[in-house]
Length: 192
Image (cartoon, rainbow, N blue to C red; front, top):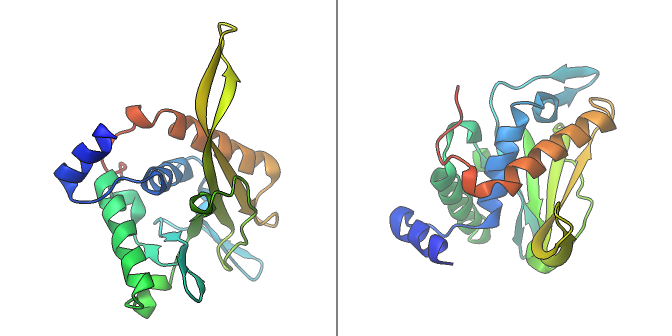
């Protein structure tokens, strides 16, 4: 909590798990670029940019504003974009460009207490990442001791016409590794 307050004082925005997940997705896509492609007919279009859609719950359902060039942003900038787009979505202030040209989407249904979900892909995107609730679990440690750890459930829905399960699992394992080392994560933008 102290780190969150320090982050808020320094950057003027609340630090949430959604921002960390968004940054980790962006980093993992560097090794798994097929998940950032689109499918146009029978053609796979690879994207040189990452426009991350963030699902936002509104009274009428869900709307997905897009963080453009997310790969060029550091953690505070991602957090500010998420907060700003969520407010604009809930106040019906989004422009049409705010919800177009996403390359991959994430949804955080964990805010509702749901641990696991299977989100639906937004065509022509080929993947969507779902984040469930963070829960405390008893976990065996490498030295055979037992510890209580926070567990975050992550799901990935992807188009099998573009990639297979092994590739998707590789992405999830990379995402897991990045999220397990959040404190080691750089707050700098990704290299170009």
